Length: 186
Image 1 (cartoon, rainbow, N blue to C red):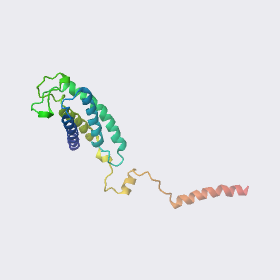
Image 2 (cartoon, rainbow, N blue to C red; image 1 turned 90 degrees about the vertical axis):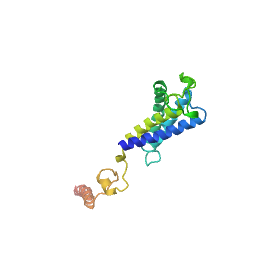
Image 3 (cartoon, helix red, strand yellow; image 1 turned 180 degrees about the vertical axis):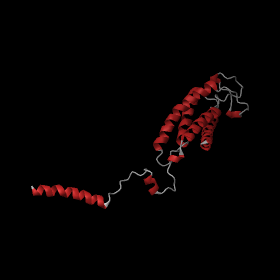
Image 4 (cartoon, rainbow, N blue to C red; image 1 turned 120 degrees about the vertical axis):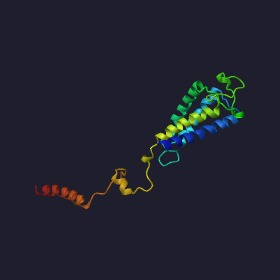
């Protein structure tokens, strides 16, 4: 479980960091509110599609779609929390990737805060969502590649109809013939 949690956090850090880096390169190192919320929703969607059971896995389309939808809502909500309460200043200058977020009232010329910068806030939000989704994923539910079909059928995982035995078929035939004989005697 701890390994899956760490894997999810790393996936989220990569997705959020890349998205924040792209925003910083587009000139939104310290984005205004609407761009920050849309970017957080996009980060939630992307993490929902790849963390846990990814969208390309067998029978995972619906699950990944639901995680993406919920990730968009949670991402926007977490961005509100980050912009509101994650006001710790970034201790190192980030150059063009950092700067004061004037829409949050940060002092001009400062290095910015963790909640105000795109690269830090999106990475934190995506890491939190990725860790949650990956820790929630239970790999024991997935089919093991070496499992034999007979073992699966014995466990109740196979819902195929099994043909009735020959003795049961003969019994059914006998039951149908007897009423016809009784009707013929009357």
